[in-house]
Image (cartoon, rainbow over all chains, first blue to last red; front, side):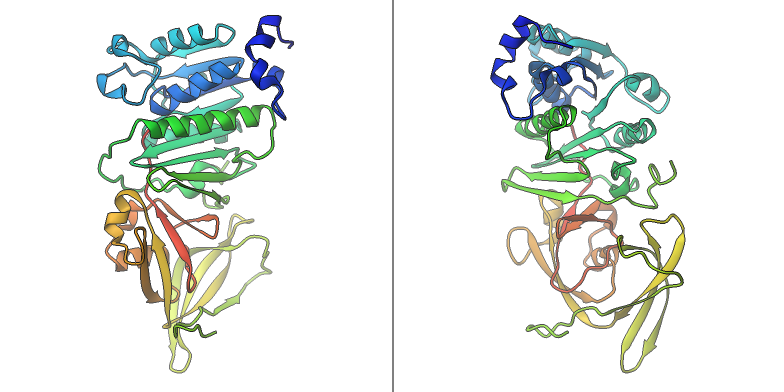
Amino acid sequence: MGLSDSEKIRYFRQLNVRGWNQEKLKSAKVIIVGVGGLGSVSALYLTAAGIGKLRLCDGDRVQQTDLNRQILYSEESVGRLKVEEARKRLSSLNPNVEIETIPEFMDSQTADEMTKGCDLIVDGLDNIESRFILNQQSVKMKKPYIYGAVQGWEGFVGLFHPPHTACLACFLPQDTQRLDEMPVPGVLPGMIGILQATEVLKFVMAVEGTLLNRLLVYDSQNLTCDIVETEKNPLCPHCAVS
Amino acid sequence: MKHADGTTMVIQHVRFWKTWDWTSPPIIWRRLDFWENPSLGVFLRYEVKNTNRRHFNGYVINRKGRVLVIYLRAGSELRERLKPDIDYYTRRIETEAGKTIREILADIGINPALVAFVYTSGKVKGLQYIPSDGQNITLQPPVAGG
């Protein structure tokens, strides 16, 4: 899959980055589940970078309270479907990227259909329950899963590719109790979404140094960043039985 | 092994029913029983699983009764529950050797269900992890937003 002259001009500033492979990027198909704080940022940067196909899944509509962090949307978007607003914005940013939209929430019944044909799954969700469904789907399809989550001043990013690596359920118990609802500063999902997009680009182009089987813990209050290894759990309810 | 501050390292006595594969660490599954020896202290026996094998294939015996010191760290809202005393994030805990993180959290009044996992020495561990003397352990809540 070659690049057109206009694509060569558009991507000129990144084509010479060491390890960069624009053609590989152009042939990749990525699904972003949830186009909120995390998903809108990763979608924006993947589109700008020239990913081939982007599938966006979200059944939600834009609310005024989303506008502090969900930078794909504006005042005019309030009340409209997120995926449709996202498609308009992303298509105007880069018409070379094929954008598919699914205006539905993912559940265990719809997960198969939604993720069909995708090379990589990006997590843009806002709750643990849906993340476990997404993780299960990644285990089932043996597709890489870029995990991201934020709360308060802290954020996580991870790249899991079961059965080669641990999965989310290997270390995150399903019976944990949520702390009280915490506010999220708008910049934090921005940071984490960009890191997720970076991991997608590196994984697709086979650039070394991905977060494969590792978890990045970012504390934006103290400006610290820990990268820790995860281990496969032989008792994992998702990947140990598969 | 005695430290300068008077605490003692946990001595792990390991016995196996089958040959152990040391390429993967044992995972504590549940406590089986314990017994006391007047001169050697309390011994706890845990059922363990090898991370390379699906089924139970051994047990670990831990000596208990000695005090060890660990340093728990937490950010965000967990930090307030931890009540740090060393610095902004860290609390020094004296505990009995052989206790799991889950047990230690319960002892200091933190509901273990509020902690999703911990990490120490660059590795993620579950709440069944048994710390050793002097370890720094970071607690992580179930971060869920997006």
